[in-house]
Length: 131
Image (cartoon, rainbow, N blue to C red; front, top):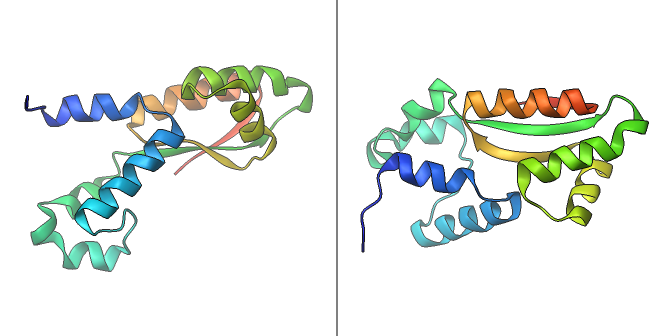
């Protein structure tokens, strides 16, 4: 089995759709017996076992891009197209995501990618929140 670097793994994960990412997180939770969103106190308590994961959480290098709604309902189709481009989801899934806002568009993206997604969605007529 070929060994992948951390950067290669991150690059591979960044291409996943929201649904694929959710399945991946569930698989990791099951395999290692952990939860993906521990309370901050728990992350600090488990820092020696996590190998520095608590330090990464403090630096805020990963963001969640959330579509809060539309700035103009007439621009819904443009926002659906951008969501489809950014996520790789099918047309129906993108339509459901936009109409069901607030919804997460993509999780665990770096600052640069989050800013680019924010810009594209805002220009298309969406209201975006980065967490």
